[in-house]
Image (cartoon, rainbow, N blue to C red; front, side):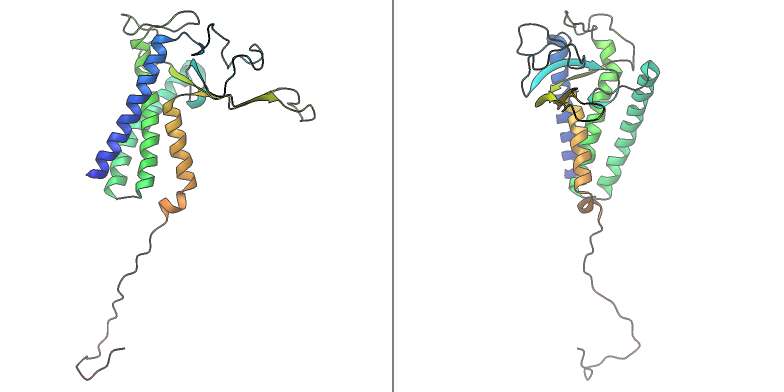
Length: 239
């Protein structure tokens, strides 16, 4: 019971912080707004337009929205978005059952934590996809969206996922001698993401790193019982 409570608290904490950050960004920043800039810079996704090095710090808050997968990846337009949202919904439903199963089977606490992180991240982005189109106005590059405007910017299951964390730690160019990309801009780390994406990534990476510890069967020493027909009495010495 204690482990189940801890898992629920972890999931609720991630969901609360993730949604609080997203709602604040959505209702306080226009699209692509840099949190400490006096003007609206170009989105980091618009390669070739933003001059290299402009408004670059190692950590920034950029408000962008995506209609696809984690880290801003897209998947097949409107049909792909609907399919992805339904897949997320099915994954969340399966996740509820799976978490109950691994708790019942008393799996490794680290593995349970990883599954909880992945589940919370998937649910956090699913909330955006399911409800944000109904609850918010559409964000633009010059206006801030209102919460509960009376009519949202999209229907059920068609909301956009809010991203905001941007870590352009290194910005440079590939050397000219590198095939195909020589001279092109290189940026590490370029994706813009949210807390839900981070929770999923941490859960998956930790599961891969510690998989031997999580999945190996522990061989517990036990007593060996030997059946014998030999009568044992006080005169028999057992070594």
